[in-house]
Image (cartoon, rainbow, N blue to C red; front, top):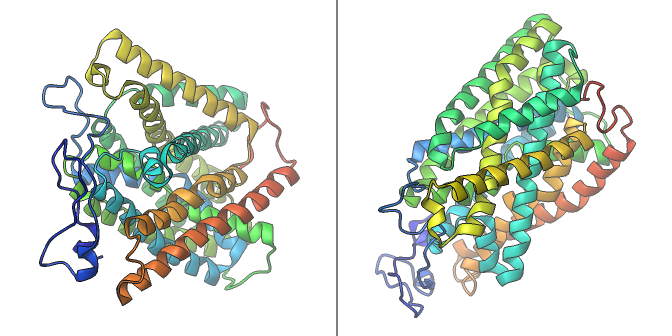
Length: 459
């Protein structure tokens, strides 16, 4: 992208009038773009604050995004390849990775243009006023709760595998709930960044072990360029690939805690280089050696002993990636309640007690969802259809069109970008509509497990 497309707001607090950007280095069509009056973000002035939020370095931001993105999604990729065939799956993996990189950059552009944005709700207010704010606030909270639920569900699957169903699955779910709640309690993302590093090392080691073990156990690769499929199976597989890139719902939140929001492209580049490469290698290798019967989560495709070891190695990721989502969900509500008050930066009983109370409520709701929809792949595809389709693709397209209204056809470059962003919106619409149908039908037709059951959860 050209620097001219992301010219940030530089107005001082209290300035009322919109001003046009005047910069002799910018093209004529960009000269017409308007900045907006400056608004303070939810964290306010932190010079003398007890709790300071805007402390992230770019690499810490990148680690948080890597930990949130490369977690459960990668475990469903080999099964998604099996449902689509190798050739279509590779095309979709690379294409969606590039599109996700672009839409992530657009989110950064909107933050630079409107510095007060710290969540999807703030972005929704820019697009559609109060209605947009409330709609995206509710949507982001629900999305994060579903992510939290999927991690609790996967923790139960992992513990059942490691212990050979040593106790009731509900007990494992409660253990995951308590662990996740405890780790969610730090109030700043900087304190979560080291957990993020542990999370990435954990999933990388587990996937690497699984790839090596499956290749040794099945030395004859089973490669099918294409496979026969149907709408439900094919689209559910495509949705699970989409989910592997779908952490955009937290991007505004992590940018808001950067020391310098201009560093976001560095963090985004770190994320996308790592996830596209790792996804391609892991999905292709595990599918080729495990074949059409590859499990989801993929760690279950190795021998029983290796699966237990791999799940043990993956436990930090299973917990920590959910914890990051839980932390951000808590902060969305906390800042909504206390923004503009001294409670934002205090460590007194009211501030700490409120934070803990919000965390308990959200994790209990997530646990209930995990017990009610105990089918890993179907839960992931439902999440993607409802939320990732919009947060990762549809809404960024709308953001760009909004920022460039009146300039859509101002130059050949603008026309190309207008088409690209319109296509992003179309991707979101199609994924949401067909995704809800296919995931809903899959959940309805799956009778392999029951809600709130002591039986082993189905992967």
